[in-house]
Amino acid sequence: KTKLLLDVDTGVDDAQGIMLALAAPDVQVLGITCTHGNTALENSCRNTLRVLKECQRGDIPVYRGSAEPLLGRMIDASDFHGKDGLGDAPDPQAPGLDQLQAEGAVVALIRLVTENPGEVNLVATGPLTNLALAVKLDPSLPEKLKGLYIMGGNIESRGNTTVCGEFNFVADPESAFIVLTQYRCPTFIASWEFSCRNKLPWSFCDEWLAQDTGKARFMGRIYNHTMEVAKSACYQSELVAGSGFVSCDSYIIAAAIDGSILTETEDVAVSVETEGQYARGMMVLDYMELLPHKHKATIIKKVDQEKFKGMMMNALK
Ligand code: BDR
Ligand code: CA
Image 1 (cartoon, rainbow, N blue to C red):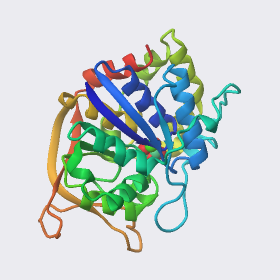
Image 2: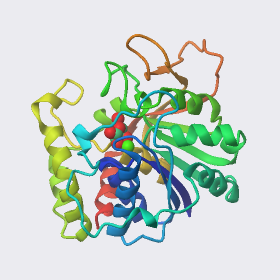
Image 3: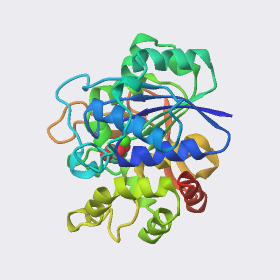
């Protein structure tokens, strides 16, 4: 079985990714740690519990993590994911925060990896604050991982939050810097531009949501708001032109489950700009090998769309 640990800021595409992982055969989700990001930490925790309830997987432990980035103020992405981070389609029966584990996310992350040395794929789909704190507490953590999978950063300096910054890295640039330079383990990165360039047609999305299941109906409810924003005029930049279904976090979770979906990758050392007038939070790719940090990450360029579609369909079955 593939053992996964998910670190999430549960917004709509995190929810899609979590459901993809839960439905995948031969995958064991050891736990889910939550962070600030798309929405405030409390919402991110609540949304995660809600997704697990919908999937009848309340047995998976959920841990509360960082409420803020290492420096500066928290930003959110409520314009895209809704005020509650999950499309503002509340469930009155949603589980309460008393369902969270008493153990904190960072301590749990270190413990779960240490108990399963060499076996865990750690997947981060939110700002990297919990992962940065974890490696500071336990510098040997990366060598105990099987792999690290990150949704975040840019490969063409095209922003979705600042002029050239992607949300997860802009939300905590210092943590992104620490993680990219201190996790010297096999590392895979799904950037913003990769996600946009591998979008699925809206017709696939219709088919996906039309499945006659409780999970598909749940997804339809929470995805409504985000889908409207994604289809709206302000979202029609050249990168997302023609539009389509971009579920950023699902790509990296799919990659952590089945590496064979990756059809084009490039290995290069990466870092993050932590200063700068315009570029704070932008990922930099060191093609000239000038930076002190030499560890190469695998940058994902293309996925096998048919396989990915199959995994997405399965997520709502
Ligand atoms: C990332 O930011 C969030 O809005 C999404 O959940 C995804 O993780 C895309 O930039
Ligand atoms: Ca996310």
